[in-house]
Length: 548
Image (cartoon, rainbow, N blue to C red; front, top):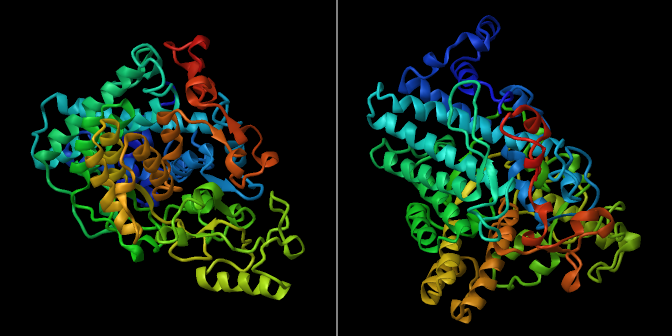
């Protein structure tokens, strides 16, 4: 690795202890030793703060070779729905390679920014977590409550990063042969040259994830609790996040009992949001359901690299202004009128974009019978602009979403990134119980969520494993739309992509190209990210034959 891995914890210690210009100019990054950075629990807390920031920062500000086009989870979270076809482009995107992702010509290229930046960002997280974990193993620093909290976070971070890597750069656990399928290199070192084993098996990496998250839980049990009341607090990982991550790991391993039990423990202190909260824009970690998220600080100038730039139709950027993101029409048609989530997708928004990929943009091409005159067509556009606060030059499009909305609509402010919510935990529990043929238990898990979202919800309709699984797939697609789950879901369920089936999604084959249809993951290696060529070239434990 591991030429690309640098001592992130050293840079983090500098970045988080001072913003003083003279300090940064006169204290080069190699002047603070790893021993100083790891000398105390207080210094290690600075390393963790750097990891919190690394999740969303423009990487060139923190990592050697980083590129601003992939600003951490601003890019990786919506990528999962972009790749899998859940969040649909209505017209051509303009930059960041976002259209390449849609067309499946980025993640499967070994020289792309996507394959390279995701790989190295996650391994930087691992290297920094290793530094804390390995220092603790020396037994020099007393394991008081504060240090246990730091260790809990370090183990959780390592599990999170390895899970991300193995889910993207290897075959899915449930659709392959995990005991023999190649996973990713296992890096446990904390000092240069960061040597690693060759690619470990998929099972070995998942086992490491589970071991790490269990260690995290053990440490958190004796740790200082996470503070509450501030949006920044939920950037910190705690025992609930560790249980939530354990539920994700187990779900994707098919360890159904473990997944269900962990999901119940994870969500207990995070009540389901009501309609007002659900309609508030998904822009703050302070929402009651949020278990973990990145509180994006205003000085981090992601702006036109942010999650909301890529996702929010109220963001004042060309990515959405010329290309409103829309919902799959087939999913929309499944939503009952009594479900308030339906109101966040504007089926009848006029198609104002003359460059829309469906060729129906502008009044002259209008096909919606609601608008019988051009004046009515324009009046509705004006009304929507006033309701949602987007810029006057924002294009509208049928089925466009207003789920993710920036706090200051019509601006370029980057908002928080939600990484884990309690609703996901109900859905994990339901899926796991359904797979165990525990129909009553799966229904109970769905009932809490369903009855909050849909005033006419009747869970008794789903009285077999098969019916439950189809309904759970619908609920995950709707509840977690745009939040970064569909890619992994499709791999777990071994489902391909077909924008043409069942009346069509609303996506254009000309626009989507290879991404318009993809065979299921078990028979299609295109779902697996390529290992960066730079890694193949630099790592003595990898060769051309290790490429996916």
